[in-house]
Amino acid sequence: MEIVIGLIIGLAIGAAVAWYLTGKMANSRAQSILSDAEKDAEVIRKKMLLEAKEETIAMKAEAEKQANARTTKIQITENRLRQREMSLNQKQEELNKKNVEIEEARVSLTAQQDFLDKKAAELERLHRQSIEKLETISGLSADEAKERLLESLKDEAKTEAQSYINDIMEEAKLTANKEAKKIVVQSIQRVATETSIENAITVFHIDSDEVKGRIIGREGRNIRALEAATGVEIVVDDTPEAIVLSGFDPVRREIARLSLHQLVADGRIHPARIEEVVSKVKKQIEEEIVETGKRTVIDLGIHGLHPELIRMVGKMKYRSSYGQNLLQHSREVANLCAIMASELGLNPKKAKRAGLLHDIGKVPDDEPELPHAVLGMKLAEKYKEKPDICNAIGAHHDEVEMTTLLAPIVQVCDAISGARPGARREIVEAYIKRLNDLENLALSYPGVVKTYAIQAGRELRVIVGADKIDDQDTEKLSDEIARKIQTEMTYPGQVKITVIRETRAVSYAK
Image 1 (tube, rainbow, N blue to C red):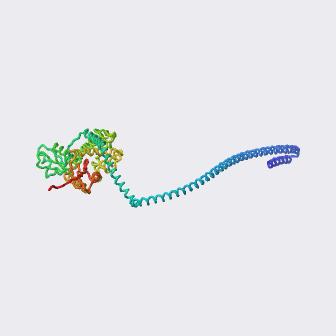
Image 2 (tube, one colour):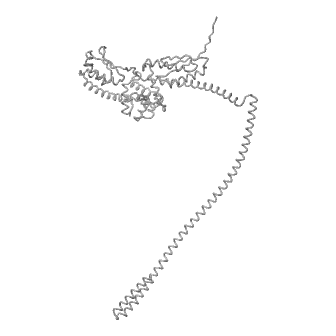
Image 3 (cartoon, rainbow, N blue to C red):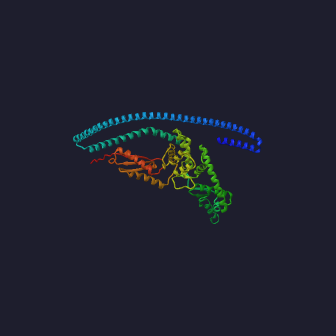
């Protein structure tokens, strides 16, 4: 500020000098101006000093204000710290008291433990003395007495357990067996089925034997073309007005039959025409398979089935199992499952769905090396069927574990459909082998004298020696044979195991 004042004074002096140099006549005026400039400079200096003082005062007030605020914060912080210190002191005192109490309790527990250890040692001494007295009185060691007691208890428990099991089984037979038979009989009575059996051949009837020569063709070219196109053996023999179509695949036989029918009706029979007709018939059969599947699903009231599953259901029409048509069998099982599920208070729609699909593993195009139940379960899983349906399909021959109530229903209904008289047939060799296996399996048990498979393999009579097996062991033997047959053999329906034990007294009169 003093520099500014100096500058102003310098300027005033400079102006005065200038005026003085311009003329002596202006000297007096310059002095007057110089005097005025000095007065103005003094006023400006005083004003500047006043403003500087005011600014200094304001800065001082602001600094004091900030200092007061900081002092207040410090006081608040100090108060908080004092309160925390007091709280920590109180907690420290409480902790010290608890430590003292814990130490007192530990001392007390130590004393009690010492007392208990003394009592335990005294009891152990008395126990040993008692055992020594008992051994002296009985003449047996403690281990020998324990073994005898365990043996007697084991025999007694085994006898009581067997008796208890027999009582439970008898009670269950009186109640559950009656209800189960009622449900099964009602289900069978309410399902009407066809009993026709599919064969491995189809007979094609013709109007006259002249047609046979046209079917054979020149040097047999027509019949060879027909066999190559259909995959079916065509037997043209001396049988009047009939041609035999032989093949294991019913679909191929049906294609061959329909192709022959169209060729004979048309009259044009040559290799090119044969291939054309067979191709058309194959397309017709494929459409008929899909239509059959749709009609079956609609008849049974099943909705939301995958198109590929519908096609497999239709294909069942041309498959057979032990001579039983697979589609008829699956429809029968579906209806039985629905009826039985309704009787048991379960969902009949799910049961019907599982019953219809339980044998789809028998009709895939590729037919991999898997049990048909497991393959059917995998196909159902592939086409987004629900887990309980898939489990019922896979478990109906016990290849997988049953996890829902639908599984035993499907298994029982499948057995009902396959076990009824006339439903299925077996090859004689396989039938005889199954009966021999039944008898030999029972003969492998000790104490068995003779075995007889009767009722077409539905019942196994087992005769045991009276001197080798007692009455209680006959129950065990019957259960063991049943379990072994169930796990090791394949058979339709069920097998009843009857164990017979008799005592004979023989004497001679001379």
